[in-house]
Image (cartoon, one colour):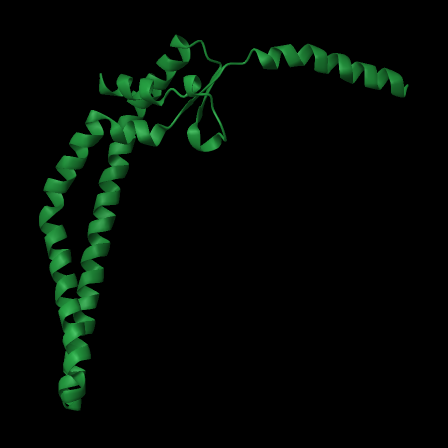
Length: 165
C-alpha cells in the first residue's frame, strides 16, 4: 500500500514538473516605472509649484523656532525668569505652528499623490497586460516579491516605455 502511494506521488510530480518548468514569469518594479514616467514628472513639477508657498511657510516657522531655541540656549542664563519663560513659551508656540503646518502640508501632498496613483492605475494595468501578452508570459511579479531575476526577465524599462507613450 505504501509503495503505491509513493509511486502515485512520484508520477504526479513527474507530470507536474515539466508544466512548472514551462511557466514564464516576468518582473517589474512598478514604483520605479510609475514614478519615472513623464506623467509622474509633470505631476511632481505641478505639485512643487502648487505647494511652494506652503513649503516656504513651513521653513519659516522652522527657522523661527530654531532661532528662538538658539537664543534661549545662548542668552537664557542672562535673562530673568519671566523673560526666559516668555521666550520658552514663544519657542513652544513656534514648534506647534511648525508641526501643524508640516502635518497639514504632508497630509495634502499625500492625498494628491494617492489621487495620482488611483488615476494612473488603469493605464499601468493596461501596460502590464500588454507586456504579459507581448512577452508570452504566464505571470508578472512585482520586483519587491522577487529575490533574483535574470536581467532579460526584468521588464521595468519596457513598462516605462509603455507608460510614456
